[in-house]
Image (cartoon, rainbow, N blue to C red; front, side):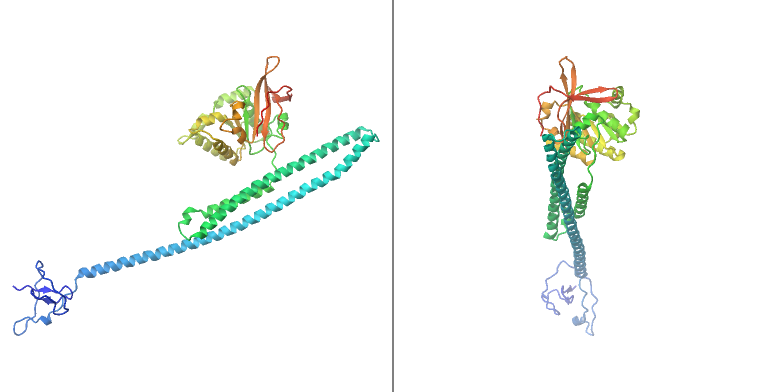
Length: 484
């Protein structure tokens, strides 16, 4: 039987010995292993097939299917590219909108700078008024002194007037110096923060316009930056215009006088001294009376003594727990473990989370940590000066006025690597001194208190049923130490 083959190009039938298609001229290769289906040949009158009447076979479906798949693939890829282009265009528009918001924030920042400059001018004008008042008083004072020197007037009233005039002149000079120092300090801090915000804005603005890439959104959170700028500007305006807050009283009259009014709000104060010098009692006295008499909420957090033992000790010293029950929280490690059950991480972080949570839930204003050395012992890492500063800043950011009890000897406290004495806002030293009669006396002095004109002399500290009291300054004092 004669084998009939098909042209791979046009499908026309060709003979087994044909080397070229009679229709399209395609070169034919013998397909020896292919068994084509038997075609139905039309025959003429002679019984011989009419090759020209053979209907061409349809093109292979495989080729049509492959072309169709390729077209679909290209169409899908084009559609993806169109969608990606649309997304990029939307992201670019969002970046441009954020850049405009950055420009607006920069404008608001410039307005705040202008307001701060106006505040500076107002304070300068107030200082000039004080200077003018001093100039008016000075001639009158000199005239009165001249009369007194010549003996024209010799009355006690004149002496009292001279003394009052001197006091007034000194008070004016102190007020002028205090205003100048306060202005310079506030303006320096505010301008420094504004400079930092300007640098951040410029960096974000330059990055937003340098390359219009979607990846920028992942690198710079513009909305967060704008929010931070607004918060910083609001805080600066509040600081510049807010009146000076009165300090917290220590409820020891002479100690308040020594500290120029008491403990400044938002400060971190160290109380340092050896065992038995009544550090804990002095700190608890502050919180107890603040809660009982001033309605000020606080927390005493002891890492060395149990809560019940501390309360019994303080009740034995005349501080009834019922008087401060509503405003004073007393916590220890047992309370910490109960409240933070399941918490993981460094104990330092757990303690800080506990304090932050408790402050937020109870609106606390005063906080005592007993003691700083026990807190460091809980931590798994050593404390550097930077770590101590971060810890103190943590308490300040919570709005707490913090008293930190320290047991490190003063000689070591002035030179150790933690530098807490220098990082703290103030420090009170308690000492045990042997008197001439071999009795041990407790001495107290305020070593430092930022922004206050303090009395740094030693006083004798007594505790009676009605609380603490201080005697006049000691005539014989230990070797004085200076703190920067």
